[in-house]
Image (tube, rainbow, N blue to C red; front, side, top):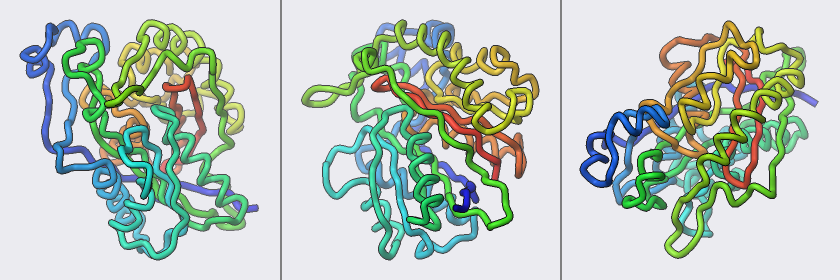
Length: 315
């Protein structure tokens, strides 16, 4: 069975920028309080006329253009999101319609902040099994729709956006560009990150998530590298779910990824849930901080408490 690879990536963020000073006028907080705890300076917020599927379609269109692939060549669309309002049609079908795709399989994946890496593994498995030849894998969330803007513990964290990847089969003589996934969950901690109620609202037990991430992520990240046949020192970049700068920054050093660029998009974008990993990856590629063929660790974690990671080769 052939492996798969990422042919190109793309991202999209709404134009409206919400700063820490803006938030200080809304709730009891300050720029210093937010930066010292989570490292965030700004976040992008979508307007009421910008639904999740529009964010996703913009990112996907950019990825297709970067790959030089026609929309009609896509036979699978997987959208990772936890902020879909309607149950049907799902986000993948809406994105396919916006892009004019012909007859793709279209499915949504809801694994919250670990959604993109789960969706990427799903597409990789489909390609390896011969069920798809080219897939659009998208992480998109409009967290502003599910945020209590009077709760300073959560409203300072969130942002909106989307990131996308074109995933396609490798040639018969090519090395796979997406490694086997390491994924799992901690069901007894599922309550630590929640989107519940009517209307749905985001809530979390921040200290519990922080303790889990800082203690459990390093061995999981090393195990992900092992599945790719690499050691952390081989990595050119580390792209974690952008939850908190205090979680993101120390990981590369802890696992021995001494040569790796560390994605820090949380500073400018906040926590964009399923969008955070592809958004950060796309920006590293756009800025030229990583180049074609570079090994990059992707690792998402969050709601459920679920996690998934793989090493990919930079497109």
